[in-house]
Image 1 (tube, one colour):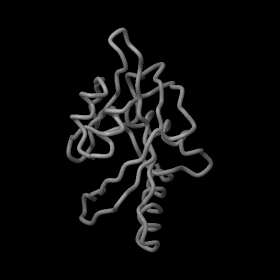
Image 2 (cartoon, helix red, strand yellow; image 1 turned 90 degrees about the vertical axis):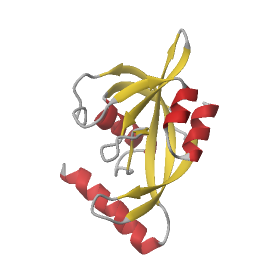
Image 3 (cartoon, helix red, strand yellow; image 1 turned 30 degrees about the horizontal axis):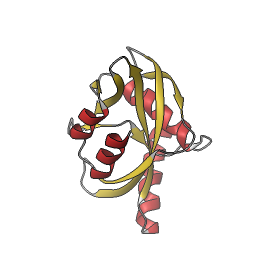
Image 4 (spheres, one colour; image 1 turned 180 degrees about the horizontal axis):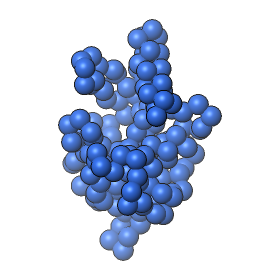
Length: 152
């Protein structure tokens, strides 16, 4: 928990003093079905809108591995094959509960899901659901993420 809080404060601190966008990593979790690809979306804790699992890079982990860790914590992805290179990037503004905002650029890594857990760290705080990539693109708010999902 301490590492989680520390990483969030470090991300905001870096942004304030660098004048750049904060960097996050996201997992585009998917599975192949007889009907085609299905993409896993989760709800955000604050607004309940549909998003992909994402968070700050983690010391000692490649960005793709950090994205997979976020997929575990936020969506219960127990095992997945994550691609080492991002499939795209998108920008958004992170609004903080106590005011303020952080401009963020997010690297997106494709992760083919092999298993989901029923119990996971943020399972009581979020909903998760599978969508076709086209349906997922309609559910998310960020235009660049919509494009990544449509092209997936």
